[in-house]
Image (cartoon, rainbow, N blue to C red; front, side):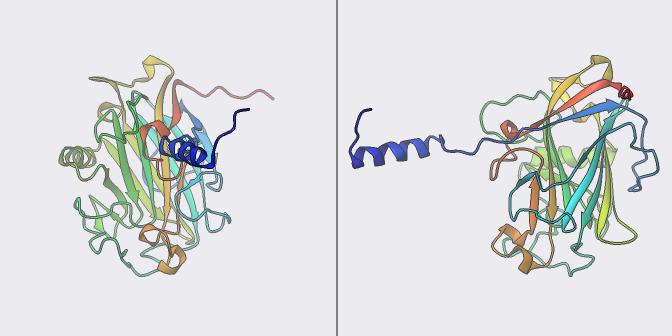
Amino acid sequence: MPKFSNKLLSHLLVAVVSTGAFAVEPIRPELISWRGQTPMIDGELSLGEWSDATEFRSVKNWVPEFSPVTDDNDLSLRGWVKHDDRFLYFAFDITDDVLYGIDTSRWLPPENPNAHELTPKGFPWFGDEMELLINGPNNWLGNESAEGNGSSWQMVCNLTKSRLGSVGLGGLLEGEPRSQAKAWATYQRWIQMGAQLATARPKPTGKGYVIEWAVRFDPCLELEAGKFYTPAQGEVKVGLNIALGDLDEPERGKGNFGHFHHEQWFAGAKNTRTQKNNFGTLRLMGTAKRPTKD
């Protein structure tokens, strides 16, 4: 084995770090979406409504952007995904011990006193919230994030503010890249025309909330220019990421950006989870789930 001087070893180490050789490999899990019955997007999980969907649970094993989750009573979820002829559907049953703006005051982060403005200056994801990120073509050039169009996007469903309901009523908000006027206008148009629908409702017993979310294939799931997913195409793989944000009292998020307590990601790695090359995979099957044999 060749010997290197301490000086040369130092230079080699700097070179390795600068090229990202020590970067954390993103986690890229997979979900399957089967064709099923059309649910009501009303924030109520009716009996049997999601029985034909794929279920997924927990967030302790997701990627933490801030403080890791160690207690299911603090933050956890049951989620479901399926589709019909026209829409992709998600449901999230979230357990959360403290609901921001409901159990707490509507405090603001030091990074942005305008966080609740429903403009590009605001923070749409500031609060208890879920985010969906889709990459229809499931490809990327480098480390770019969503473009804000039918091929790749990042949208927000917040528990206590929304585009259609203003501050105080949960629902959909324009997501990232909110600083780009074209993306902002596209997201706003989708919300207003019903291309995406979402309802966020606190549980009657407290300690959590329910989100149901519908995404229309056309114009929100563009596989290539002018071509949108349909079940007739059979199985198609698209890029997917999901985020669950948890805001409590400021002191519980001390040291984190915006004093967020938790922000858990289905896929990716810390600091890079919004890059398309960090997304997991959603397999749109186009057919109904086959019953399992005993």
